[in-house]
Image (tube, rainbow, N blue to C red; front, side):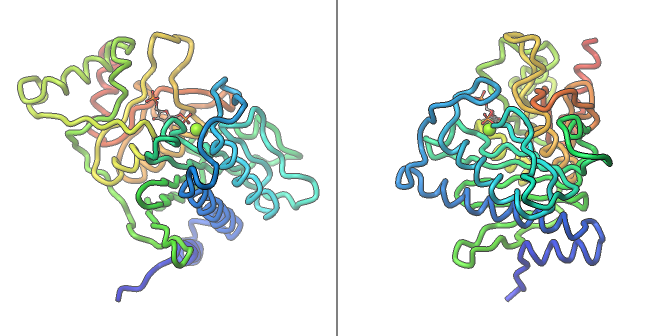
Length: 335
Ligand code: AHM
Ligand code: MG
């Protein structure tokens, strides 16, 4: 039987052989994975665990929180605050940053997460996930929100865990993308794919089509051409998928290619997009680039955007390189 490589062993070897990660970062990633395991348990229990439904609260973006949004946020904080590897955390579900309490040692890393992505899918038993991103705290005393405002290109680790028919953890530390499947009997994540690569071309797009009439012309042009299929300029038929969980849509793209878009739309023109730069777009964009794909906001590489606030939103186009390049070119041509 082929040897099974656990997440722990993978990380130790990344540390030892490739030198991609220091020991503190390895510890941090193991703790995040442990938290994901525990969120996965809660997700699995569903109605039996009393975790479905809405909580009586709103998050900072004015969205109604689900019970699982809050549970997942607490699990991640409790798991990560005592280990000594972190200086602070930031979450889609919390208004300000969370400082590691004084009673624990302070580390040099900053952890950002969307604890439960795809919240609208929780109650209907469709795949959801956790997305995370790790930055290094800049030199200097204390830690402030400003320390988090670093471009995605500065990430030192990023990943997500998708809670679907299987629980899969997908990770990059800048040395390609690796996927780990949760073995529930052993209670450990096992390496099931390494050096994941996305095909450069695709015939599959993912976008919420019900927003089409609100998009900017370059996005409409791209989708209209896809819809014309063999009879149009693209000369091939396209397929559409939309799970409404970014984790699940990105996971499909990492597995078989495709293009994912959540573009700006004119209903709320002052908002750059729906998705959040720091918790969703940055980690996913780095994973996609590490797998040979591309990610832009239509005009600029997402990883190069300099954030000016923690909960900043962004327009997202990511996936198979040639398609992302095409949508980006349509934006340039429209200018
Ligand atoms: P959430 O973080 O509040 O769950 O929102 C993000 C989700 C993404 O996972 C997904 O791509 C998108 O919102 C779905 O939006 P829509 O409801 O327009 O289909
Ligand atoms: Mg969310």
